[in-house]
Image (cartoon, rainbow, N blue to C red):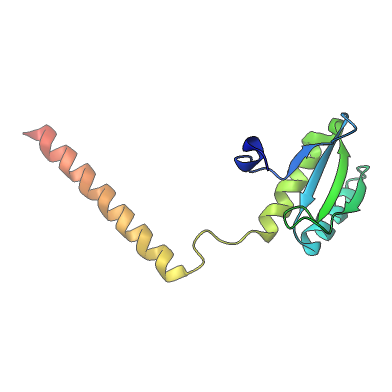
Length: 117
């Protein structure tokens, strides 16, 4: 993995041999099947392949760059459906929110008191 790939958080790359195409990749079969169903529903041409050697990119889709705008939306829908919550524990999430709002309110009160004096 090169330096650019290490800090690139997208799940698509330029096709290695055909410059008019992009390759979208997914880790799981369920993500792949959902993405494929969306592509078929929107009547977008694609070519599907599997890469058994890679952990990160097992299921590959080659898509024309002309369809990139439409496919980005479908890709975001797919990623959103299968992503894990940032804070899966609801109690912890609400504790963090209460602490954050408390600090914000104290900061505003402090600012107002300093400005009044």
